[in-house]
Length: 97
Image (tube, rainbow, N blue to C red):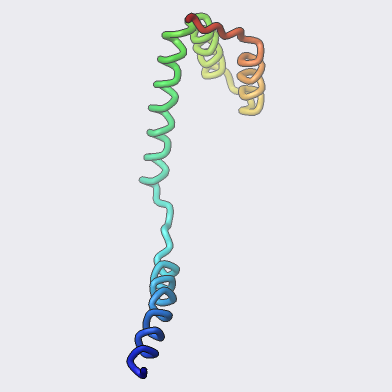
């Protein structure tokens, strides 16, 4: 009986030790992590733009002209998002079946 209670005690303590090990290892964000996320966002944006260009040329042209206009001017980022939201609300998207 004594051996059974010792084994149960060891099994009960094991998860606590593993939890403590994971708590001690905290991930710090590095500059490389930031660059990786930015690269992923750029590739995803490019893929979305190409797909939009394939299915709706007019919408892609509007997005590109808006991007070109905003990249040449200095403006507030909130204005850019407001204009993009207005553009997507006003654009009529048709799916050809």
